[in-house]
Length: 451
Image (cartoon, rainbow, N blue to C red; front, side, top):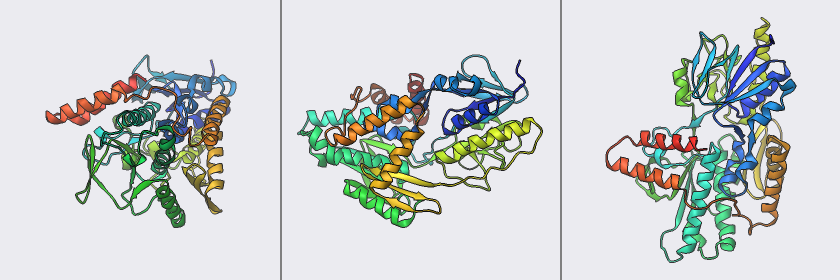
């Protein structure tokens, strides 16, 4: 029997995948636990939602990933983690026996933070899972087909994107290109003026981490594409078919995409760990959970209070590498090292041929060169050569056949029965004075269980 430490890694996002790779290279046995049998490349989910990529292009089998690791030291276990037994050193999952560990790495990421805004949890859609992206896609294109079939119908289709960070900007830019360039070609029955894309941001600028000139450039480029950009605008309440703004204005909303904030998963609060700002696990600078001896956390789900980190992929990937070395050091009785983030810079795409890139202590650039860098890096970061090739082919096809292929998708474009059922249940619960949050959570859990 091997004497190498057995490490359980919860979550197969950027941090979990990085930690698994590094741990197996250092000789540790790893069990990677995730509720899905696949890794999802979240930065490109907006491309799935807008028809640029198929879901299979941005997902990768975790069993295939585990089989490729060094000396086949990794195993995959599908399951939702429901608890941690410290005394027995076991991870409790919802299906099958507990998973024993010598050391535990929590890398299950975060979820949407609605900041307590009434109706936001019930009536908005997020973009953190493949299912959510597909549902957004089907809602959008189902609505386009409805408009095309009813050209005299006075109703249009308004999409409100909440949040002016990279995710919100990328989503709004892609939707606007579909509206401005794709609809006149692919849906000639639809007057593009009946389709609106509105980007709402509470701060007075977009892309907070970027320099002011790049922020202004981003805003101008979005507006050129037809996005109605509203900064310094806060949301008071979200309803089934509208959004109330602080100040009294009400906007029609057929679809609200929430990209405004993230927070820790509620279930993590039940694991007995110290929880800090944003519902995230409080960490020592070694990435060990505060007050623990064998439990670490990495990625967006953890927080080092003395070292705030951007909630993007690079810190999680660097933490995955670092935590592996610290676990091996701890197992050998050696001193662990504090984590220090090496910030290489940040980037965001605005649309076709357009992006902004800001290299830390280096140049900043925009437009086509930045877009090429953005596309190249994101294709490179995908798991698996097959996914890289498929994504490259899909994006290239869309690029060279633009705008004819700007709204091409593979799949059912009817408004999803799950969405219609969800909205009907929420309206009924609201009318009866019931807890709409509980109803929304129940429907989301059922949809997630169906994949």
